[in-house]
Amino acid sequence: MATTAEPEVPDHVPPELVRKVDLVLGEDFLKDPYAFLSSMHDDLPRLFWNTGSVPGNGWVTISQPLAFKALRDPDHFDVPPLFIFPRDEDNWFRMIPLEITAPDHRKFRNILDPMLSPRGVLALENDIRALANQLIDQFVDKGECEFTTQFARPLPVMVFLNFMGLPVEKLDQFVEWVVSLIQFADFGRAKEIMGEIEAYLTSVIEEKRANPDDKAISRIVHTTFDGEPMTERDVMGFTFFLFIAGIDTVYAALNNSWLWMARHPERVKELVADPDNRDLQTEELLRAFAPTFSGRYLTQDLELDGVTLKKGDSFTSFLPACNYDPEIWDNPKEIDFTRVKKPILTFTGGIHSCMGGHLARLEFRIGLNEWLKRIPEFSLRPGAEIRYVPSGVVGPESVPLVW
Ligand code: HEM
Image (cartoon, rainbow, N blue to C red; front, side):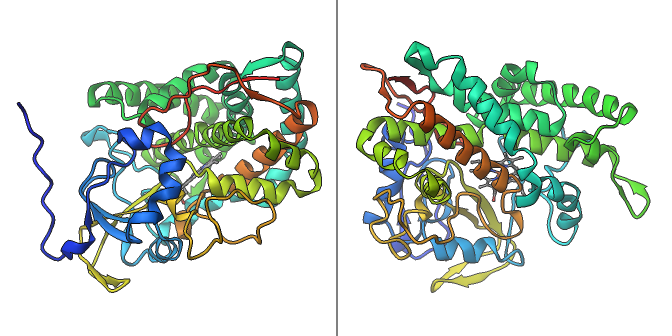
């Protein structure tokens, strides 16, 4: 019988900090990810060396303060090339801004920051509200919907495509590409998908070069730095990364939160009764159901939390678990809409904090508000099977609801 060799633990790692936990690919994780994530503090150290499956042989932190410390220290921690997005070695592009270090990184972010600032996204408020209601119109009288495909996905993805200046009719194709990549498509298929997305974006970039508009891709295409246009490879890298980052994260967060609400009708009553508290409710649900992680590696040796980390070590901030850190939150497993607001890690921290965080929060808040106004009582369809597949973004595949 074939056996998988145990990964080698480097000598500088104290043996008492070595654990073997199968994280995003593990059976226990996939059975109920947020039960798993919220319980990690019960029996794991806040910083450990993990030999289990993805994120693989390296440091993992589940501590909110340690994660913030690492994420805010670009002198010691850098972003590795994202392995799930294989690129052509001879025609490489950098995933911008995530794979860029300071100070260059800031000049790229400046291009879109005005559109994505708290003020910038407010310009989208009325459109998001109208879209949420149009989607609800399509199923409210039927007494049921498949939440993922009928609300969680079209709401943020249509807003995002409009922000980018991409055609909403291709929504299904875009979602399929991105979800396959994030779900660790096999290497051959991942390379094909990368080629398909790149070919598509190349034609969009040409079109925006000829016919500028005020949307994100066109702004990137027409940016100059000190009078010089951005290189063609950097235009591709920025457009490509945005395309990956903006598609499935918000809908995973919505899926996770609506699944929880469908299972807790008494808590939905509490939400319905308090429409003036949507900001805190949004923040608490986003704390409880963060869908993704921050991977880094050490660029030089460092002492952290009394432990020596060595240059080259991999270091993952397990953000959803950090959001359940009992050092920071009382009763962290409880979803409590009256909590005093504290910094959550859902959108990570430091220079690479999520560019879409304000947009995502706005979409979430409006989605929650419009939904609860029109569908204040709902539950899971009896017999519905909730399934999670291995992915870099955590969320159920489908959430069938009835009311
Ligand atoms: C609930 C929704 C979202 C979540 C949970 C989320 C989460 C994250 C996280 C954790 C990172 C950091 C990754 C790392 O540190 O390795 C990140 C970065 C990023 N996100 Fe989001 N994201 C969301 C929505 C969006 C949207 C809608 C957009 C686009 C409009 C977006 C654009 C970006 C970009 C461009 C970066 C890279 C920032 C940089 O490197 O400076 N995100 N996001």
